[in-house]
Image (cartoon, rainbow, N blue to C red):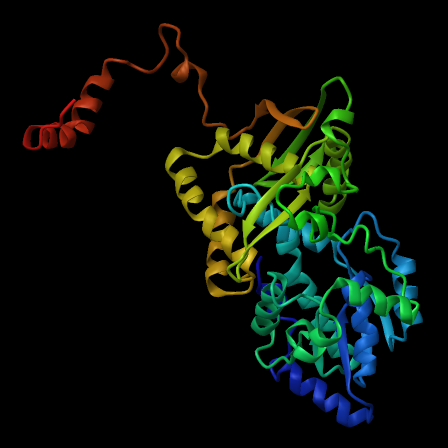
Length: 432
């Protein structure tokens, strides 16, 4: 699931040589494919790459960004002078093949972050390589900075899919940083070139959005004493204070660990996430404010909102509590942090991830059933669980008399389990 279908799309002759061959064949100038979002950084890059003599092919990878005007973004790229500006819709693939497997792992980076940005980057890289092959581009360009995680995710994914790929990362080039030492200079460049952008000198925080979440960083958020909720215009959720004064329930159905329906209605992966975003968002669910450890070594502060995925994680965990045995759950949990690190760092297309994904597919086979969540002002509570594969048996667990569990058996069990500590206690007495 992590890489099989993707690798099959890359020609064995090598994408770079394929691109070069196309360039020689059709006799065009040097061109690049740019992972284009329409934001400040990539808008500047369209102009700067042209200044450097490149034909720029912009690819907007539609990940279900909830707050973006796609037509306006495409028009802006063409107005700036892009050789081409195309959109590719990968919303279903993002949820089905990327987000849901990570959900099955219950993977959270540093125990809290659901990694909505991290999950999407390998898919963006894949889409750009495919577009590059179509237009005969000689390089893949991204707007990630040399300080951040995204440069790692883009490059590690692209090089795994095409080991000989040429990657242009302007933020790692001194001549680019000399022109744009900060966001102020980028805003001035856009003003000079008549490039419209959302960021302003007054509110210069950066945002990245898709159907899984929206992230916010930079600007006033770089001061960890500033309350993030006071400076962010959230796009997917209301504040808990503004949420309804009554509880709302939602039922989510899973098949083999994959969410398939909401309130009895079957939905595609992307539609399901969008539906839960609406439900969780109006109840103020899924906001976090963290200081995290970046892959490159520094700490950074980010504010995130992921209402739909927050509900899915809670429901999925609640169903697993019914359907997975203790030892398998603990084994999965012991590996979950490694999966989160690999996703966060950018190691999506690698042998270790392939093996881990095969493991989780086997693990999730009995995770089938329904979970009811109760939502109230940012809180998410599992209030009901049902499954045809439930390992919970009331006659065994009941505190009432009777049932199939003979409490006398516990005597022998504990004598055997306690043997090592009794021997240790006799040899090395402890003070108490």
